Length: 322
Image 1 (cartoon, rainbow, N blue to C red):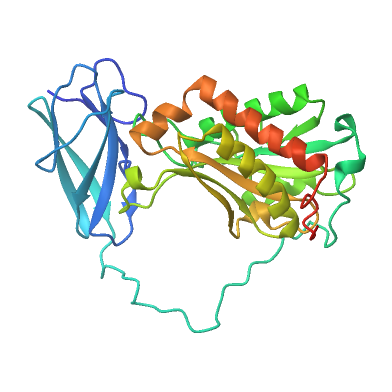
Image 2: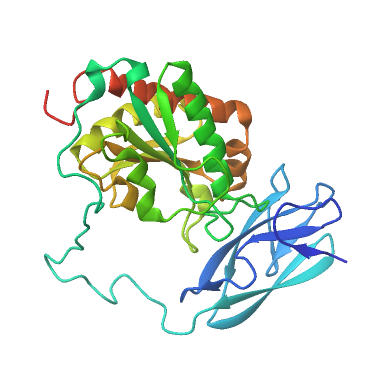
């Protein structure tokens, strides 16, 4: 008999489902990817009647068809059957043409209310010991877990582990580092960058994250690393970090470079800020890579090297034309 569980796979379990979680209510979709893991001894897996490949770690991914309301998804591992319930909102499936945005109507995103309107002076005139970097491990706490990997590991923990590597590398270079959190605790999203603002704040703010795909997009086709900015000073910092991370992961994961986004933590005219998406967590390959300690240290050192390069100045470091 198969045992259905959530989270890290127990030794006695045959199959576990990490996403969607029981009790989750999906939007109005007609299909969704499921992810989970099986015990190492399992040789065959069928989800909704279709054969599913088992990755070497035991992780698996499967696309399933769903409809509004309760859906019972049959999972068969080596002949043992488990039925998993997925809830989907009722209603018409949304399409790209259902609600076209009016021409010229774009959402307006405001800056962080506590951030000053003028940018701080670039730290190129300071020594590392006089320079403070704020590092923000994204998510945290019981409710804000972020993305979930096939074995049920949470993004919040991956973010914190990578943030510690960035801090270690920066401190080795002589920088002072402030962390928004050092334990698994919740933080108000718009309060995260407050640590970097004001007279005793920081010279730069970097938020650390790991990505995941939408319900109906194949996670295997969307794995990459990127760094997000909101304004010119954030872009200058992001470019240095992106170049270093891209070089460190060359041949491993695609580097999409610097992208623009209206993330709350980056809307800062005062402190150069950016958000790093180091990898995708919801694929078997991504999960395995993210929890590789040697690789994590390499990424942390690359992020720190990018920050160090930005701090020391050079063309584009201030966000102004060279």
